[in-house]
Image: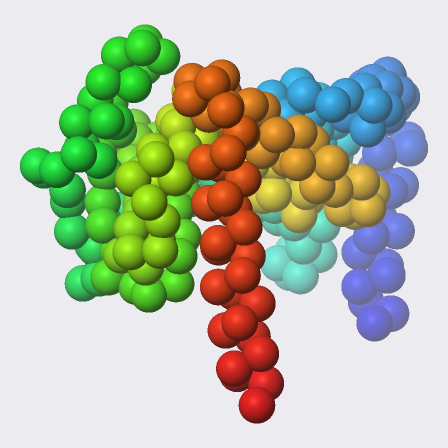
Length: 256
């Protein structure tokens, strides 16, 4: 414990005794606080994630800069602050890239998942993708009784619909859900939500100002799109009601 405190003491001494480092630290930290305030006040998911990314980048940059130019002395344990400051941001970037690129394929490679090639769902998604002027996502059916639908936006966008959802809902209700997911695809909600959740891991203060309110707004906008396309809120509301009732009855059954 004493050795660790000594390491960080030496690292701080290295920062405080270099005018260039201090000249970078002060404005960088001030801008970091400014971007965090913008992040907190913004109600738009895309802006919120971008502000959070700038907050974290400016928060880490002076520490990374000073660590790179710190000539730490052996043994290697004395270099732990430098290694920590360099590898934490790198690990965050790698996590976002791998999660965005590889995670969606884990769903597609699942034994429960199969590509829908020819039915009304495929034709409906194809037609409405053209209306939205977006790349048509592939649609997959998941062999699961739990009613669920979600979209993933990456290099190869996809919509996943469980067999339980298809059985539970009427055709019009299922179309309302698909319209909802297509709107998420157009807005790239998955990408922004995933990025925001990963970024929050790298700043302790951001974790206390969650995205719940902003994500709720995104859900409302997706619902409103489905309502505008169907000229009624009947189907999206009945679909959500059926899903909620199914999950409630499932919880009661499991509790017995």
